[in-house]
Image (cartoon, rainbow, N blue to C red; front, side):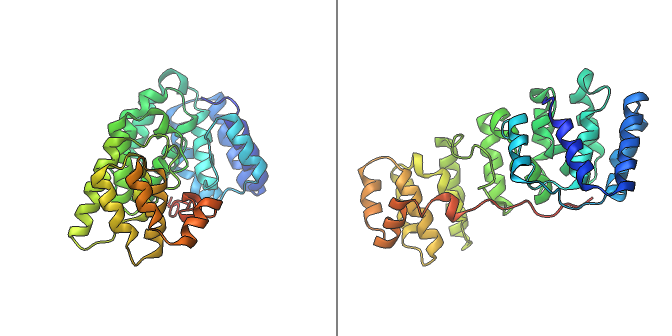
Length: 296
C-alpha cells in the first residue's frame, strides 16, 4: 500500500471541499481513528455522496505527477470527490492491514454501484493486492460499464496482478460491452498470441452477424498476426471506414514478416506518411476516454 496516498487524498479533498463538507469529513476520519468500529467505517462510506457531493476531483498536472510518484501507475484523473473520499476512508480503516482482503470482499458483496466504483478505483492503493484477485475477478462479471471500467481503465492492478487468462477475458469483455481499450494500462505489454486469436474469432462472429468491429481490436492482433490474421487485416484495410483502415495500418506496422509489409505498402500514401511521421498512432486514433458517469 502507498503510504503517501492518504496524505494526497486528504490534501486534494481539503483544497476542494467547502467548509461544512470538509469539517464533516474531518470529524468522521477522526472518529474512525480514535474509535475504530464497523459503524465508524460503514456510516461515512454510505453518507459521503450526500455530504460531499459527486463533483469531479480537481487535479492539476502536478497532482497527477504526485500520484504517480506515490504509487507508479496510480491515475486518479477521472476520479470524483466521493470516490476519493471513500477510498481515503477505506485506506485509513483501523483494521485494514490485519485483514483487508476479507473486509474488501465483504464491502464489495453489499456495495451499490457508486460504492463499487470507489472500491475498485482504489485497487492500486490497497494492501494485500494478490489476495484481492478473486473479488476483482467477480467484479469483471458486471455488464455495467462504469463498474467494469473502475477495474479496467486507468488502473495498474489488472496489468500487475491478472494471469493471462483473466487479462484476456477482461480485454474481450471490454469490447463486448462497448468499452474503450485505450485507457487499459499495459495493453501493449500484456498482448499475447492467445488474445490475438480470441479477438480474431470475435471479429469473425461480429462480421457474420453483420455487426461492426471496434477498430481498437486490431491493436492487440498486429504483433502476433499470422496468415489468418493478415487475411483479416487485409479485409479491414479495404474498409470504407477511414478509422478502420488506419487501425489496419497500425496493426500491420506492428506485424512480423514480409507479408505484413507487403500489405502495408498497399495503404494510401498519405496514411503511410502519417505513420512514418508519428502523426498516425494508436494514441491519435484512440485517445483515452473517461469512464462513463459516477453514480452514487
